[in-house]
Length: 242
Image (cartoon, rainbow, N blue to C red; front, top):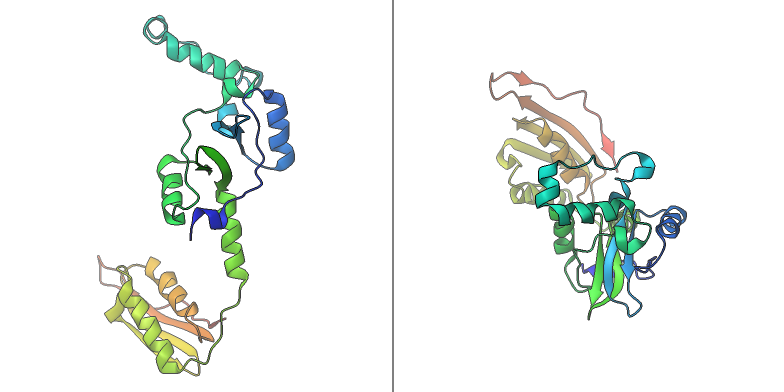
């Protein structure tokens, strides 16, 4: 998928000269945690987020005064910080160095940017103009749309189900493919065998549950504690029916 497939196009934004109080009111009313700051010609000037509003004298959260050494050698940085924590206009408080993404960028790359920079939203820019906004909420909304769609149920043989599950085991580096036995009868899957990490259990079960044609999954997998070799039987097994 591409960013353009998921992004919000009708974005809520402010200008650099917007009063901070107005911008905050807009964030509260719109139930959003960040606003793109856009010039009159459509160019991106910055972004105003909740993170820019944490250090404020009104809240008693501004940073304590600097030492004489810092005041002497970091005066510019301290002045910038003062303006940001005391400013009353958006352009005095906003973040100016903004990570952006193009509308035709792969969604995977956009998510990687979010993870690498610890950010919740990416302005979408094309030809130096803001054309949308990609946020975590957009990703969750799109995921919800996919999950609401029922599987395209097509007749699948028990052998086909077994082959699909085993193929997915082989494709996953964490899966002990050779140690798990898969039996299928009338769409009902029974898993047995041995794992050495209890975290593998849920992932193995998810593979089975997500396979088209599966009606239920029964977990009979045992766990071997790798340090002691003690074998722990599967917990009370219950069929998980799709």
